[in-house]
Amino acid sequence: MTTKLSDRTNILEKVEVKLQEIRQDPERVKAFQKMAVAAIHHGKESGEWREYMMMLTTDENDLRRLLALDGSESDPEISTSRAYLVANAVCGSDTTMRTGFGTNNIDKVFE
View 1: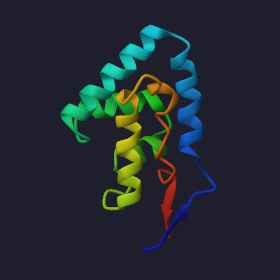
View 2: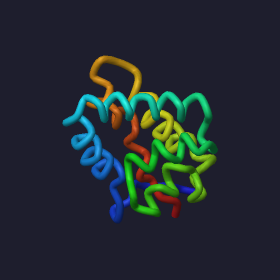
View 3: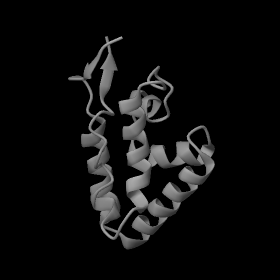
View 4: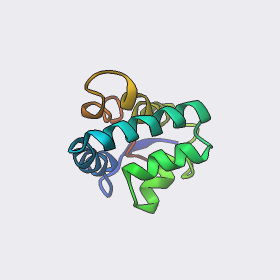
């Protein structure tokens, strides 16, 4: 099965809008980081993972991608992008600035 970047959705653009909102409030940044840690510890099939991803999007199709419920579970590039979305939230002093780093394949679609 081949994949390509989708022209109909851009999860990263939507995530960036959410992150800009979160960055405005240091307390929201702390809460966001705590949610990311919980998502990492409990794994991608957990309620904590879902709660974290719901902070990033309210779009049902995007959420299905972020939760690996859209058939993209076995795609290594998309899986890596999902991992970066969570890991980057807690990886350094500029965390919320770099949450989208390494996630450029999250918008791939299957043909």
